[in-house]
Amino acid sequence: MIPLSVLDLSPIVEGGDAAQSLANTLDLARHAEALGYRRFWLAEHHNMPGIASAATAVVIGHVAAGTSTIRVGAGGIMLPNHAPLVIAEQFGTLAALHPGRIDLGLGRAP
Image (tube, helix red, strand yellow):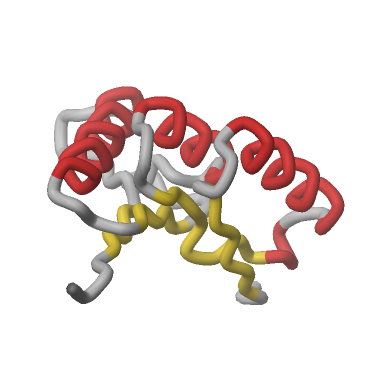
């Protein structure tokens, strides 16, 4: 069987808000987990009013806490936007809370 993954931007639908978007993201992750998907990736995008996944580590924690087996991670944390030590600490903490389930992708986009 080919391992499948989902990449979610946590989009804010017209008339919706970030809270509903994050609830939709968790719902999608639960469905993906139930269907046997291997990973659930979240993308980091900043300064975009239609995207709720800017605080990627926080959203990963939310999804990991609401699921039990699917791996959860970042499609790419853009290191120029963050202090690398902070990212290491955040993902180290997530890995301690959800052993074997947290993935960290790194990028360097401006």
